Length: 173
Length: 223
Image (cartoon, rainbow over all chains, first blue to last red; front, side, top):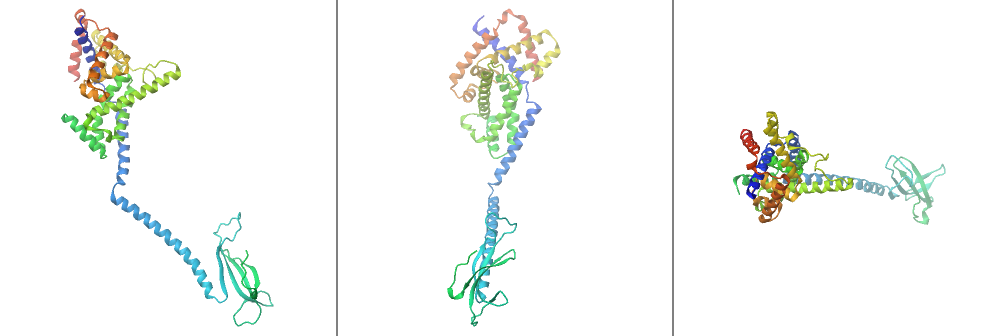
């Protein structure tokens, strides 16, 4: 048997095998799997393409801008209300706002409300029936600086009473 | 570049733009060829189908890796499939080392699946219930087993050059080697295959001629 004969015989056998292989077709299951892969790829490609559109970017930036503006406005409103308290206190003769936003509860205590308090320093006169009377400039009686702490839960407490002639002492909590 | 491969390149260009229809078209064109390659290389229908699926998944993920200057889309797809097969083979070898058993097949369950189980042509032959048909089935099985028994580098040149009948230049692109290397590997692969098959002299075997005649008649009816 010559080399050519061997080669021809081998080629025929391989040809026969190749022919049998050519009858192979992808199964319905493979078609379905590839289809699913293509669909999920197309879906992800579509969502990525969305970010390439200029209008999408404009909408996203506008949304972020609107949210930032809202947050800034809310912050300014809170600050404005605190300033408003100071301004209102300044209009009352003899009343000074010492501190605003002091936590009403000590560390470790828990309240379901955002606890805040303000301490006011008031120049007042002592009255015999008990308590203090807001003093006017014309009063000749002995006057005191009274530190009053008012919390947003409605409670009020006198923190410190100092004779007015001793000057202003720092309020204590 | 032929008209078909030019179309393929256009399909990949459309794929890059997110055209799902182009992906389906490429699968319809080349899915079967990849399946045949996978079957010849792995001897397992399941592995071959996984290979086709994974190859197209890779194409979908990285269509920009295709460079028309380096070869046709088919070569690109076969290149992906070849790398995946090498990975599967390494994993199979590792598994075999762990279990201290020689690898039988790339199939998940370790059992090889004869081509005859899936082939309509061989099923038709079996239905004829003739001695020639059985001879032919046995011949196909012997060749299939002998091809699978070859070392991977030789099996792939047989699969690409002789079974898929791809041009040497395309095979060289797929394998990433010069055409001369493809020729020498193919020559060596054929010699190994002939030795495994112990190819008989046709002039001494009249029955073999009958088998060839049957092959031609079946091919004519199948195509």
